[in-house]
Image (tube, rainbow, N blue to C red; front, side, top):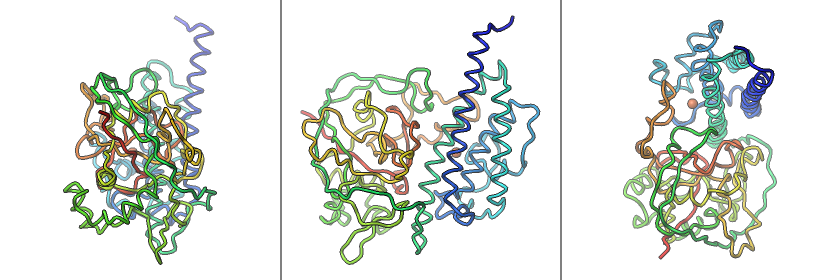
Length: 434
Ligand SMILES: [Fe+2]
């Protein structure tokens, strides 16, 4: 049985668009690393941070391990030792180098990692162009997972290098200063939502991670959501009210963390002669009261909400509010790499939809990262991608100024431990409606 001309054309278009998705993500990762010297790319500033060089190699290992070695009999592994060095956490893929020692790898060099990337990119290009059924049907979902995985690491490259640079007394800037509008916090407006039996979670043929599924019913009480994230100006009020030394606002674990680590402001905030400044990927600059507060832990987000007499939204409330909103905003394609004040909100009265749900800052929710009812992890080694982390972490929603555009959706669930502050995470307030 032969394909018709129309079938052949459709198959060609399918391969062509897959190749475009693959090439675009590889190019973008390399563009992000191009601002950095080989020395910059080798540093690990804390166990959560990985060197840029490691991200470049690990995203490559993902395609090599889960696609090329399985589906291309002619593929030659670049260096068998890399399976040990660049496996992150996949038990099924064998033993691996310790996460906290990734900064000790002066070898392979940045040049060798670049050659590794070129080798795997060439191998993947060949496979995408030539793969036939039935393998192609298996390759495509793994290819899309690899593309989305590499996008996640693009965000990690920016998060991680910001932390690395922040510890250098020279405070290097990743990029030139960006134009930003110094603005007061716009007035806070609230948007009301009905309660009742709702549905959340992903459904349909478009890409989603397994942790967003299955779509399921959930009961929601009537609630209100702030029309914008909490700003630096508002968070300054929390600091100036002495809230970092008042245990009544803090969860027990949060208070213990504040005391242990001596927190008195968000990460990257600095006070000198009574003036606050913040460190950004474009260097240090004066605190902008109108922009969304960023680099707070879940503990700080929760304490702020309590101090303000409000609460954090749960993830169902957030998703219901975001459903139908355009997925546009301050994402990485704008190259600010920092949350921006939405100056158009200064006169916002009677808004009907919350704004800045997507981009700027990931928003902490009150929801623990646990499986949805009837969740089933993906089959095979990639089943380790999400499911095994569903303990002791909290869900964040919406994406940030370092998240690749097009990467997130209303159903997207990010997750971090409650004490993590190096992610671009902020918050939005919620409250119960009578
Ligand atoms: Fe990864």
